[in-house]
Amino acid sequence: TRRASPLAPGELATVAVHEAGHALVATLSPYADPVSRVTVLGAGQALGLTETLPADDRRLYGERYLADTLAVRLGGRAAERLICGEASTGAADDLASATALATQMVREFGLSEAVGPVSYPGPPAGYPALAASPGYSEHTQWLVDQEVAAILARAETRARDLLTSHREALAQLTAA
Image 1 (cartoon, rainbow, N blue to C red):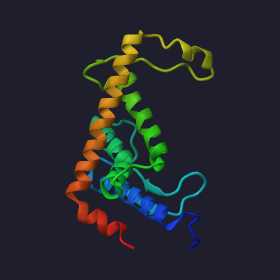
Image 2 (cartoon, helix red, strand yellow):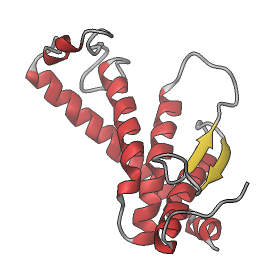
Image 3 (cartoon, rainbow, N blue to C red):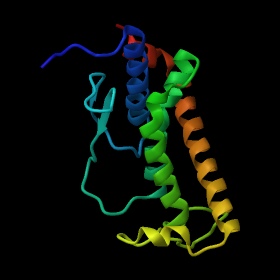
Image 4 (cartoon, rainbow, N blue to C red):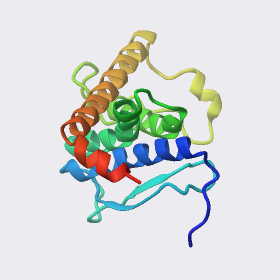
């Protein structure tokens, strides 16, 4: 069912660029889940949505899949910067989910050369008081933070590079 957007035309254009960025990066990333649906008529807090669904049932996620997933999550922000000249607050949820995944990659999955093949899990579920003492040193936390930032920077660069090399396709996706 079609409904009117509560967004101003300029905001709607930014959301269209953002969602097109997610969709195009997902399409161009060989290990990412395929795009199932894209809308700029959001629900709840979301202003738009790019839905990807796994092509197959899996329990294990390789590094290439995770790297592509991060690039897709940052593809909207990268598209905004490329087309609009700046990022917006519309990428807040994308940044939160990408940061959470990158943190898991470093802290729990051992997918960081600098931190190494170790696991520093978060506090046990139901015990928020234990969050104050992570079980590792401040230096290790600093190292984790540096690695997470580096992983996210690489993912955003990859998304930007893909979108830059396919800028015409991005423009076609966002044309009214």
